Length: 192
Image (cartoon, rainbow, N blue to C red; front, top):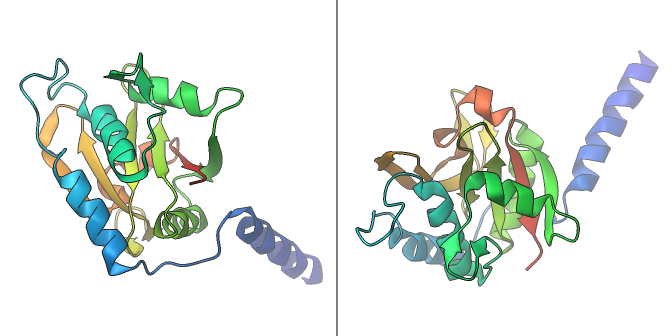
C-alpha cells in the first residue's frame, strides 16, 4: 500500500511538472474577449477561399493564431494554409517551435493547456488522421465539465470539416473531438 501511494504521488508530481506554466485557470476578461472578437471574424466561409467550407478547421486555426499571436507557422509559401495533417508534420518536425504537451483525452493536460492559453501562449489540439485530421484552438477561458468525456476540458474554438454551421467559439474542447478522436489527438503549445 505504501508503494502504491508513493507511485501515485510520483505520477501526480510528474504530470504537474510537465506543465510549462503555473496553474491559472481563470483568465482575464480582456484576454478572453480579445480572443473571441478576433476569432469571430473567421467563423464564416468566404466565397473567394478555394477551400471554402471543405476543410476550414485548418484555415480557421491558422488565421486565428496569426491574428491573436502573430504566429504564421502554418502557412505554406506565405499564403495558403496547411491542412491539419500538414500542421501535425510541422509541429513534429525537428527544430519546430511547438512543444508536445500530451494527449487531449487527459484532464491534467486539459488544465495545463488552459493555463497556458490563459497565460497568453498559443495552444492547439491536433489530430492527424487518414484523409483529414482536425485542429482546434484552446482559447482563454475556464475549464468546463464535459459530460461526454467525463472530465474537465479546456475552453476552445473550432471550425468543423464540411460543417460551417457547427463552428463555435468559447465552448468545451469536447465539442471539437468525440472521445475516440480525443484519445488520438495531442495538445501542442508555442512559447510566446
